[in-house]
Image (cartoon, rainbow, N blue to C red; front, side, top):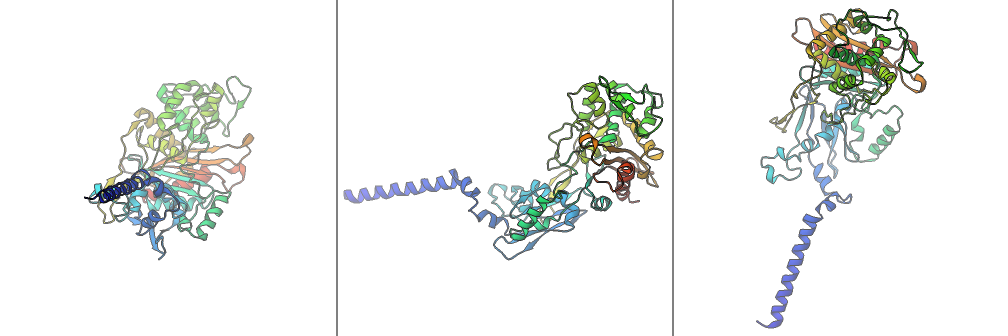
Length: 483
């Protein structure tokens, strides 16, 4: 072979190797950079070439997909969007996704390898989108939404024995369909929603924390009973009225009369601040913090499956601050979901179940991909303590401040709260009610609820958990019980 031909072959071989090396560099080493480049629309086009899977409530889809005929072909649609927005979130071609749309995005978009018959060879968007079956009770969700009536507030409802989330509502709300596309309408809606001072896209049920006020007295009572500080629900307590917070000149007073030396039963029924602040101090920081932690406070990892804001009980406080913390003030803060968990643990004999929203996920044809299901229970308090707390919560509804939560044909336990906030407590109080309900003849409670109303409609002096929040909880519990 002539030398020049051999040289040409070597040169061509080197060129081929260079091309292969460059292809490998582009497809392997720099694939991520090219794939994530905003100028690369290939993945976005592929992502929206098929309908997105659906989110189901009560077996029926509350989402859908619309064929636009454009390059990004399918847009997300929503049935009763404002009602379910705190659960579904939005799936936008321009602004991404939130809540279940985000947490279950791979399954809904069809890119989850579990959707393919051959997961090893699965390619992006090669399978039809799967469906997410939620634990929601449609009637309870509607009752909560209608009860809030557009006021700022939230409702969370849980099945105590399993942890299923039966209702999750936040108002004021918004229609996530307005954000689905990538045109000027979606951009205008995004700007309008983000500029709205009422924050309609804020999920108050899981992402907003509030001072829980007197509803936290359920936790304080549990700590006092478990620690043996209280052994008899009807024995007088050594509780002055007013109560001077330790180490200060601040005197704590009560809205109700008859709180001096009141028994735990009477103090709970009529929500005596002085009794519970002193109880918290008597129990001590260590046991109060341990009980709050057992209920779920200071947990930074709670997911349902999207993240839930941390509810807090300050573990570095003096005795005066501990007294205020024990009545749901100072730095104590909770999401409505957290307070529903507190009520559920009482209803479930002292055992807490982690809340969850996804019952199961399925392929488009209905075959189950993965189950959700209940998590193992954790023992929050002694069973005897839970039994006595149920008794106290029943009393609060039957003859105390929670009378508006009563349901004919059912046993209801509850606790009201009216939490002060703002500089010098000048803001409108938050109205709270936490409760559980058990149908007559049923073996166990079917639902636990927490309601908070931020901007209660009554005059400041008339705002109360019993007046503003309890009727909403009652309607949600009634919807679950079917009464």
